[in-house]
Length: 251
Length: 117
Image 1 (cartoon, chains in turn brown, green):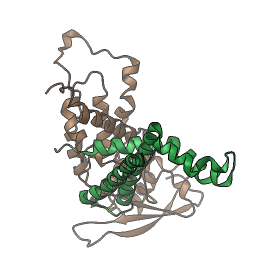
Image 2 (cartoon, each protein chain N blue to C red):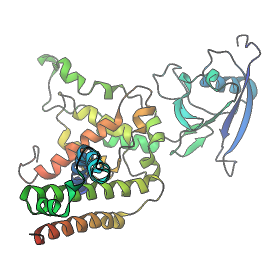
Image 3 (tube, chains in turn yellow, brown):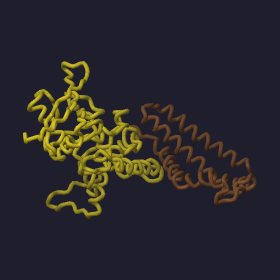
Image 4 (cartoon, rainbow over the protein chains, first blue to last red):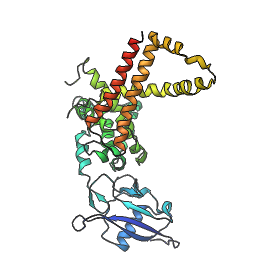
């Protein structure tokens, strides 16, 4: 650890071990820090020097892996790109992502999201199989623009912690998975839209969203899931009314 | 998964929202500020005779109908979802009440526009 210029910040962490604790509680740690230290580094300091039992997820330290999401003073943030200096001298409170069951301390159980992610068929479903010998799929820059931002999702779940509708109703597919659904539907190489429309059209699909848009505000990759969801409300509305006049492709 | 019937109400909500955003502020300005204060518009702009003639004109009837119906469907849909967001989750039954009120108001407006001649 570098010289800290004598600065110490109080980090209040939510602690919870479901095997021994009846309810979550908070513990405060005094952490010496430098101006270049992230909240994640603060947590690592606690684990290395103050309390080795503190549990949290992390991997890349540079906002690419999506592992270290948590609530910092009640706001969903990646702890690796949130800096301790911004909370000095008041200190900060770190909690696990809200709306998810706590596995232990700051680590949440992501099962619900992973099930939903699978349900949107997050892969390109081509119109017909294309052998490698026939070459690659071609795409114009314009066609790529249609989906590119949504392909930047790192599955960090900050948008789920931000979404009040997901908090109220866990049946809702949620911003992240719906934005990824749109990523594949909007891809010119994909022909799986009809298969995904059943989910889009359901109450659990895009209709669970009320366009609060906090998901888009907290996204660390500047993706706009609220836009993806609402573009699909238009798609679902067209699908709802047009099925009476035009037969659907793929039955 | 069951297909949601929300597209019907979302379309009405969206159409009403577009309409209220476009004409709502100016309607409030004309009917609530400009005419009562005689500011920019003469005070008899909305006299009984003029408004009655407007409501008896085909175009006037259509304008009054879409403004009342659109605003009602937009507003009640928004209130329903806002209540949900502030932690008062109302079930589908209540959604029927809110949309029912909007439909009732719209039908009353339609009826009155017909009987006014």
